[in-house]
Image (cartoon, rainbow, N blue to C red; front, top):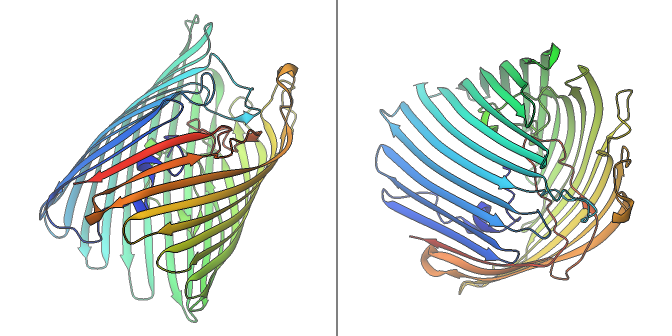
Length: 508
């Protein structure tokens, strides 16, 4: 999820770039994809897979690198994976996945002003993981799933030549789940435990900080088919989380029982109403994976928040088929967060609001259009522990409205043109440490971006070739993404310079 490859390019794209049919024969298959572009951008992915009646295997390799649009904006990724699944019987199958990952980057975050960045900050990640999963069907309407993950993680971070940090961790996670299905209801229940042991050392300091995180959870989600085409979700989750450090005297302990409620009502064949209200506690997820249900009535409940964050989310959505080939909808969601301060053991209030509408149209077999409107608001208040040197975001309000027109020709030619209007109001807690020579580091900005794609889809599902341009008008702008306190740094969705890409995908 945090590979930072350019949006809508390369191996991460699905849908139009998916070459596997719904039903597949027992045969070997090789899919390769490559991308080359401006700013020294290179990427490739190769996946070899083969399956027969009972066994399926997959071997994968992924590489991506770019110099970025400014100094110290480079990044490089390498991933190697192996996967095997075997069905011992029609009721029992087992899968094993091995994965190794390397990542190195500079300052990839866009902090409103493009000139505001670290010229020396570097980060390197190496992670090895193994996952074992199994499924057993007791009866036609009951299944048990087991998932176990072990990961070893090493991170080296450098703020400047005199300030560097190195950490290593061992991570364990075990989960089990029971699925029960009846005609008018189904129940998903389960739980798990996880443990993280990590050591951190600073350059020039002999002291090592040791951190231990322990987590256990249990949950139950039930879905009920009610009269008048109503599906209700009722459930709960219980989380027990503890984090302790040798650098801090008192550990942080959290025990929460969180309700889950969702409602989906098909008012008619063309109109659906969705409602949700639920609470969660963010705890360690090894390699960001879990088998617990991640959404309620179409609203995501897990986000990459700091560990120990308590959140409550409320949402309402309305989805409609306006005409046979015209679809639209609106959605609103509010999330209130209590984010722990690991030093004071107190919680900081934050709030997130997202309002979204969309319209999708298929004019004929050659033309389609998509349009979206989204307003996001993030805000957190100052408290008694806020430092006057804290230059992190205090308020971010972002409006984005992309409109895309796409053309597909039966002979394989395709193209698209996307225009996106963005406006943002950004405010920091403080700007005491910011260099006034850089220019404005907070405030308001609006801009328009134009992206274009032209390509050819090869016959017989053999692949595609495309030429793509991002920020065709070469707009410069001020922008700040909302992901500022997450487990892995994330690059901005928008880049203030024109970039070109050529992409080739082949399927054998």
